[in-house]
Structures are given as structure tokens and as C-alpha cells.
Length: 551
Image 1 (cartoon, helix red, strand yellow):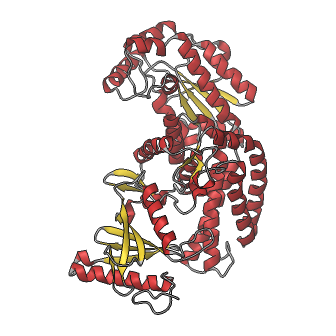
Image 2: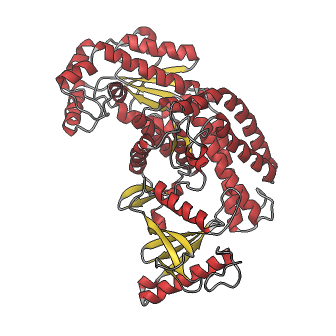
């Protein structure tokens, strides 16, 4: 026998319908207004997404899943909606515990619902702390308020999250990651995006661009198939965020807070950690901030040490751009009677069409890799190598690898660790220095072979280490540049003294180390002089020369 929900218009077999939910949400809003007695506290808003109702009231947000089955997700039953609410809470409390407050039952009747209560459960809601929309990063970047310090903080948050996230286990069932992140699973959504774009795009230019991306993807996947499988075997496929774009990051209590992890499809969050990184980097590119994209990638790599992940970074950048292009295409088709990418019918349609072009432009730009260069710094401690090359990497998109950081990583130490005399004796032995330079070259090899320019940030005062780097560039057929940092000795001494007083940098070089460098440095050989770019405070001559050589 069919059951009737209290206040419902018809038989529901124990399940609420979408029409009932709409009435229920409206009644909840009115109940909150009545209970608040008017004034600002009575302000209630209902926001709808394609899968949820969000009731905003009293400084809180209540998210209620719509009773829908869309194929890729099924919220048609009360049990399914409860499970998804609990998953959302579990997954998002990892990064935003102050934002996700709990899961509440909705009881009473469709026309007189209430939060909590002891009666039969009508539905379930995730209770969240509300925050102003203009605190979201997509709003901040549009208004010019997203700063480099925010990017650094996100990298600082994301790396420990990735490090501690569950790994894919070879023997685990698929719900816990088995098979996810392997080659076939990596490629399938990329091909699906390309197919959707090819089918729905109305412009000839758009279809030509998709054809170019199809050809690039086939070649890239063939070259990377083994790398994807190796990354999965080595534990880089983890239960991470899955939807890390600017709209899912906010400033909460003055801190970067990541929210809205994908909960409804395990395959979309059990992914390579670099795919998470790539989504944010791609979105920064799409908002015309490549400098912040390059800063974010480098900040993450410096913290994680996952330079091997650069091998698959470009593929994931293109994939993430295709995902957003597909979403925009579906939206444009919906608004334009099935035809996407043609003359806009209204402002919302125009926005969707513009987004298609923007994301396809990012995908094409990323796929068209330029000829990379290997650049190494040359200068004494305190000459400003790390500070200055930050501007270079943000401008040209290079991957920077710092000797000060990698040396400590080799010994299992955090970058800013200060060791005692015994520790430093091991850290700065000749063997440790050679091992550090070998690590720099290994990271550089991966990035260069993946089409990224590289900055090796070390003193490079020893000719042998410079020669080894030059040999790597020659073997890979890439340009080689020695970036010299000429600074007078009194300035070097003052900078080192101030840096040691701050104790906030990975470098351990003190005045004694500097004095030793000044005595023992091996000057650039005659054959090296032709490879030198002397930094005088402006990267334009170097970057412009690189641009001309790639044109």
C-alpha cells in the first residue's frame, strides 16, 4: 500500500517528491521569518542549484538535496540523500570544520516542517555556517582582491591535506579507490569532455579547436600512459577534493578555507593529487592571472617535493579546462535551445558562450608547449636569487627547484629547520651537496621533458655543478642560461645578517658561510660567459629574448 507523507497531495510510497520539497523549503523559510519576529534576523533567502536547495537564514545555510535522479547522481530516495549529506560532512570537515556544522533531520509535515524534532523524517539537510559571497575567491579575483599571500596560504593548506589523505589501495573495493586514477580512468572523462564539446559547439572555430585538442590528447596520453599507472602504484591517487576551483575557496575568519568537496561520485575525488593542483592553476589562468597560477604550482611543489608530478601536470591542466568548457557548453546549449557557441540570446547565455571560449583558449595555450630552457642561478648567499627568481617564474611559468629546500628534504627535515652543528656538518658535507645537486637535476629532467622551463636555485659557485647542469641541457636539447647576481660584498653581508636574524628562510648560510664562499668560489669560465644573463633588477630582456626564440 502506498504511504502518504503528512501534508502531501498524493501517494508517495514513503518518499518525498521535488514538488513537495519546494513547498517544504518555502514553509521552512516562512517558519524562520515568523520565529525571528522581523528585522534583520528575519532575512531569509532560498538559492537553488541544479541539485540542491540552500536556505540562508540567521547566519547559517541549510543545504537540502533535490529528489532527483540525473544518472551521474541519484538523490531520489531519502536514504540516498541522507548518505550524501553525511558524506558531505565527513569529507568537507577535513578542510573546513568551522564551516560544516552538522546534518539535521527535517520533521513535521511538508506544510509545517521543522529542523530537528522527534517525528518521522521528511528529509535531511547539511547545516553550514553562512559567509558573504564576496569572500569567495572567484569574487575576490574579479575585484582585484586576490593576493599572492592568499595563494601561498592555499598551498600551505593543500599540501598537508594531500599528504594525509587516504591512498588508493590495490586490494580495496572500487568505492574506496580501487582502479581509480589509473590510465583508463584518467582518460575516460577527458574523452567524454571532448565528445560533448564536438557535438554541441555551434561555431566552426570551436570545432576546429576541439579537433586540435583531440589530436594533442591522443599523443599526450600515449606518452603518459605509463606515468599515470606509476603514479597510481606509488600512492599519488588519494581521496582529495576533486573540485578545487576559485568558487570553492573563501576567506573565513581571515583564513583560506576550502569547501564543497565532491561527495556524490568517488571517482571524481579519488584522483592524482596533481589533478587537484591543476584545477586551481587552470582557473587562475582562465581569470587572466597566470602569475598566480605559476606561483601556486611552485608553492605546492616546493612544499610537497612532488616534482615527478610535473610529468602529468600539463595533461591535467588541459583536462580541467575541458571540464569547465563542457559545463559552459551544456549551459549555453540549455539557454540557446540546444545550440552552444553561437550568437548569444541573453546576458546569461552570453556569459556561458564567453566561458566556452575562455576555457578552450586556456586548454589550447597549455597544450601548445614552447621550447623550454634550463636556467640556473649564480651568486653568493644574500645576492637575492630566491627573491628575484620568484618574479621570473611568475612571469614565464618556469618550475623552480631550490637547493636550500631539497637539501633538507633529503635528510627528512622541514625547509625552515635550523640544525645544530652536528646536523649541519651532515647537511653541508661534500657528499650531501653532490646529492642535492643530483636531486635538482632529476627534478629538472622531468620538468624539461614535460615542456616546462626550469630554474635551479642554488649558488652554483662550483664549476663542476654548473657543468653537470649544462650537460643535462645539452642532452635534452634545451636552451641553457646562467643567471648571474652581481652584488657588492657589504650588501651581501648585511642581507645575510638580516636573514639570519629573521630565521624565516630555508637558507642556513650565515656570515661564516658567506666568507668561505667569497674565498673558495670558482669564477665563471670563459666558455660560460656567453651563457650569462646578468640580472640588474629587470627580467624583461631575458623573457623577451625567450619569447623571440620561441616565435
